[in-house]
Amino acid sequence: MRKTLSSHHSYILLTLSLALFCAMLGVGVISPILPIYASKLGASGILMGLIFGTFPFARTGGMILSSELAERFDRKRLLSAGLLVYSLASLAYIHAETTESLITIRFFHGLGSAFVVPIAMAIGADIAEKGKEGVFFGTLQGAHFLGIGFGPLISGVLTDHFGWHVPFYFMTALTALALVMVIKKLPVELTAKPSSSGQMLSSIGGMIRNSALRTCFYYQFCFAMCRGTMLMAIPLMAAGLSLSFSQIGIILSLNSLTTGVLQRYFGKLADKISRYNLIIIGGIISGIVFMIIPFFNTFIGLTVASVIFGVGHALSSPSLAAIAAENSFMFGSGRTMGVFNIFFSLGLMTGPVLNGFVVQSTLSLSPFHVLAVFIFSATIPFLFLIKKKEVSTMENVD
Image 1: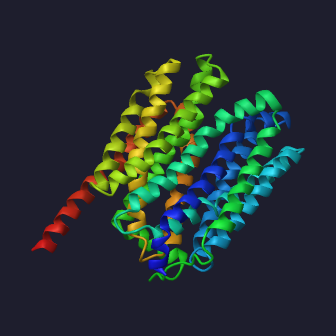
Image 2: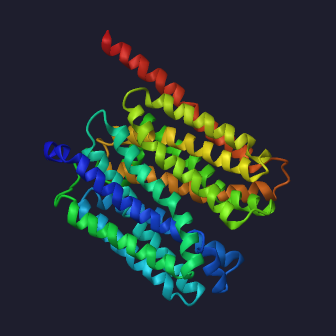
Image 3: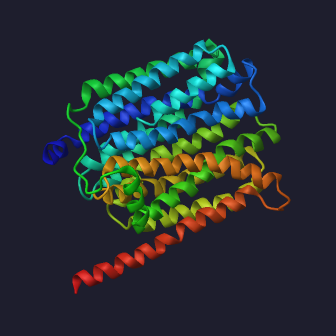
């Protein structure tokens, strides 16, 4: 089975990357107009928060389910089911008439999402050739972020020329296209490789005890807190500077586009040099950006900060996924990559909440500075992993 998949891994990688690009492009297309659409339905304050929070909440809970199912059932069918729910939810947005119905749609949209990225990464963890995990996940995640990055740019054009409802139709069509590609192009059998761990809860305990996985998960969580905060705080900072919606879209899009374009390159690099070093460099760059971003009070300044943060993300992300995939054989690739993505989702939810807490507290601190401390704290453990790996290598030589 391994040999057959390896001979076709480039073809599978292309199919998965195109599917992820289309699905994430759809998400990116509706992100700029969703707040306006929710406002038209009367959402504000807590309701607006519920509308935005329901998606990651459902996605996080759904990934616990999808991670376990990925170890038991055909992954092509699970990925197809996720994209089908994704497509139906995309179409349902247009027919939402109340905030309650919009929250329900966001729930199913998030649930469908839980069966897309984690399942695709689980497939990748099983079929990526030894020593080429970096370029595989760099390509896969690069397609993910390119879709998210191009989405807001396309959304503006569609909304300005054809109306606010067209981006929702566009998202539905893109997700349906991704579904067709998966059904038609992926191999019939994409079952899990045997793992030595039986249940999800016991597997998670084992993953946390694994120093490499534990360190990757914590870094994922801290980095996602930073990204979640940036996605919320940058538009607010930009609005305070009287920047236009187009300028805000450019700032956010360039972050994802930078990450998407560079991930394949840094993924290739991760297969040639120490992955730990790339993560450390990426963490340092990201931490420095968060230390100085409060002082960037112009369009150019925020754009530069957004792009550099994207570079930091691109440096670390393929290496993190490759290390997680390398250590997944004991616990199952579906469970491991699922938990890997769960920590990212938890970070995306926690970052904005922490930001709000710091802003409302009596502490004379910037939320960006607090999060810089978190990302630095997540980077330091990789120095110890490097030392541990060097000692292990020396012992093997002896």
